[in-house]
Image (cartoon, rainbow, N blue to C red; front, side, top):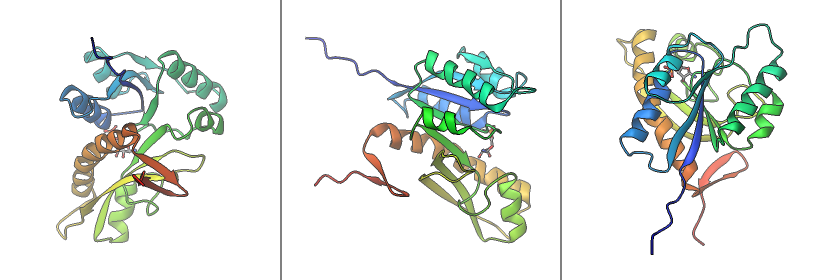
Length: 210
Ligand code: GRF
């Protein structure tokens, strides 16, 4: 008898720029670190995003859906349609620089992840690493969380801590955080796809055996 091959979960990546987190996820899949996942589509709101070029170079499905001059609801509806067309199970925001509409969030309940370069709830919003550096914190880090209607607010899947060194400038700190982001995103996706974790209020916890 031939054993049934369990279908891989299909990731939809949304990005606006460089795409290093997307590439870390793609590398993790290529290296067998995310055996249950495949990238179904990479979507950018900017046609010239380097991350989109990188997706093309890797022969992944890469789609530009420009936001300029369009209503958020209209733009989001097109992205939702594209994600559905590609039968996406989990949406991963990887440097996607637009707020999602309520309709978008409601279309993929507990199925949209974001990565933010701070230990939330500290330093939400833009330039989080610079904010942390200027505040003078001694530890910084990154957070992978589910997306809800509020900015950088949804349930936390995991966080990684990064020390702030006395010799740091904001650039050096950002680079050290980015290294951890690349590890954190893969771990968070594996955690979510494992089906072994569940949201309890604001906490994301392993489902107990008992
Ligand atoms: C990362 O720092 C991520 O945490 C933030 O935007 C940046 C995107 O970088 N949301 P990249 O495009 O993945 O290299």
